[in-house]
Image (cartoon, rainbow, N blue to C red):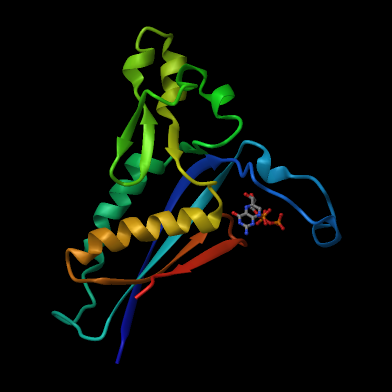
Length: 180
Ligand SMILES: Nc1nc2c(c(=O)[nH]1)N=C([C@H](O)[C@H](O)COP(=O)(O)OP(=O)(O)OP(=O)(O)O)CN2
């Protein structure tokens, strides 16, 4: 037998899909709306699985509390921007050289606020709101990134991540399966 458990998490974020291309025969419009700066109430559903139970569980649901904290502190109310976005220099002019970014082991960078410490507070607040990644923040890429983070952490408990679903809107989702 194989057991699977899942847990849902929500967070608000902004992004833009600068790489969007549409075939208007199918999309019925050529409007590249996802290139606009816009936001979502995202939902992540994490699926963990095991062929044996420990204490009657795949693992305790509470063993995902760290992930909720990660989402709340790292992504909630942030704007996720690709470092290769052609608008990067426009949206982060103080960091146009991309040299003063603080790298995190979870695969993202944030602006070094020391560089703008003498600027007015609204400028600091703006930069505090960016999460810089090395991919176009599509639903597929965000779910892949989150899967990698969860799988790495949960492997320390010997818990297997089966797949991750990411709902960019209540109707549009991507699912990424873990390679075994
Ligand atoms: N395969 C993907 N397609 C699209 C993505 C994506 O990440 N992967 N992203 C977008 C946009 O960011 C958009 O905000 C979300 O998609 P959309 O289908 O427009 O969402 P709705 O639920 O609002 O759908 P409606 O048909 O407009 O009701 C676009 N494509």
